[in-house]
Length: 198
Image 1 (cartoon, helix red, strand yellow):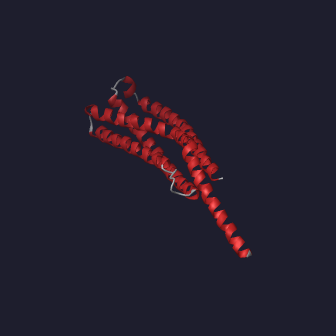
Image 2: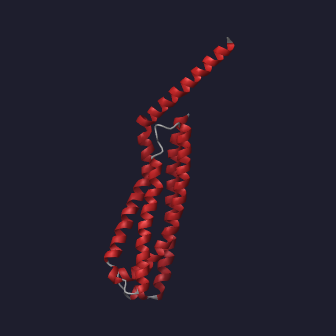
């Protein structure tokens, strides 16, 4: 008799957990999908803007390719175009999978595990993006002397010293700020998912 009661209690608990999970999934779908996406939009929108700028600049370099008057500058131009396009693809590849985390057919433990996996992938791709961005910065500074015209300033021996110093200092501060904001947005999104599992 006690064994039957225990079995019934266990079955009731299982049913209740299943109902709770279904309720939480519906609750997530209706009430928190916007919060989830708005948290990720703080990353997606800058990445889309960055992608548009990269593609636009790649087109600009291609359109003004005749200004690259030596083989060295032409190689730098081709490398720059490739870097701009690769950075665009990496940006979108890093953020878009995070949007697919809220799959209603998965349990919340699977959803959290999936999010954690995609978060690690996002960080790896962003680190790769960052390394390629430093290479791109060097290439753009070198190309600027040809694309925007040669003059006394760009032909000066101090031009590269000043430009590289300023550009790298600015870029270092900017990337630290971006990484900090991205981490904050990812943390908010993850906290939202964890709240829903409680």
